[in-house]
Length: 422
Image 1 (cartoon, rainbow, N blue to C red):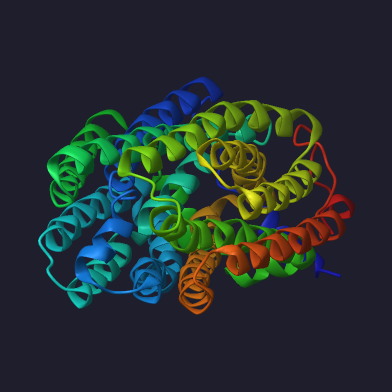
Image 2 (cartoon, rainbow, N blue to C red; image 1 turned 45 degrees about the vertical axis):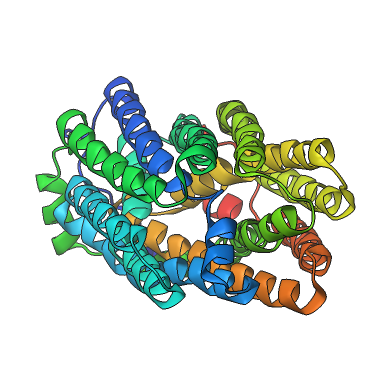
């Protein structure tokens, strides 16, 4: 039972006279989503290239796993602190600094000629850019209310997925006709373009009152987690399972598609295009559904659909069957992704959104450390992706059970009472 005085302090929020209207808040969300889509194009360009890069450098799946994991490892270390920094200095400054760092690190590993340099540059990229996604999610939380937050998270995820569709497809074309180095330079240029656009069209809300309130009545993030420990734990496990599966796919399955099924960069890019189109549509639809009926069962069912999709990857034998499995995975991602983010924001104190989002960013990144490395080791051991994919099926089913048992049931339009969130 929470002490009444402590509960009262946590329940206090900054005065609302400076809070944006729902209309202006959603306008800022759309602008941020556009910026995020441009950034993600730069990031997604390199996705179809990595398996071919590994072949050129003459290293194995384990090294590819370490390369992928190094990005997430440095984000684990810095996501929480930079999320908290965005609470103090503002979201926009952190977003701009992250974009600048992303561009610089892309230029470094664009000209790398060894796996060690690639890993170092990738880790640097992750460390510098660690603040972007927690700050973006916290920005959305600042600008929305529980009644429209699921939709807003859906728009943000849609912007992310627009880049996810265009980036790999463009990367596949560039790699096919221009080689595997140029896309990295383009990724850096896209990041700089995103920085300029975001600086021009996204405006930090008036945070003077928020900052003074933050300093006067700072709420430790551990106090927020302790009030809804069961729900936060279930959300953390579900988020881990989601990113764990993606990490396995990007290493074990991508190498399998190249080495065992002889996919071209164009075919890999098209695969991500199909996946991304499904997620773009699903993010908006499921975000709105979660605002109306609640978050819990969308997260739970999404975990089960993910398990089914991963099983389809295990038994797939050709291009069309891979695309079908990708379509199911797209549905699962769009059911879970924005809904998890919206529930995290629903349960959190407004003054600590950045810190809370940063903590969950660390959880997501930890899954992306474990998944690629384990996927690479299992691939090198067995010679295919079957065992790694089987493990992701088990993890996804387990996360569905945890979500069904541990998440609270509530309608976002209603106030979150203690009974609903305990």
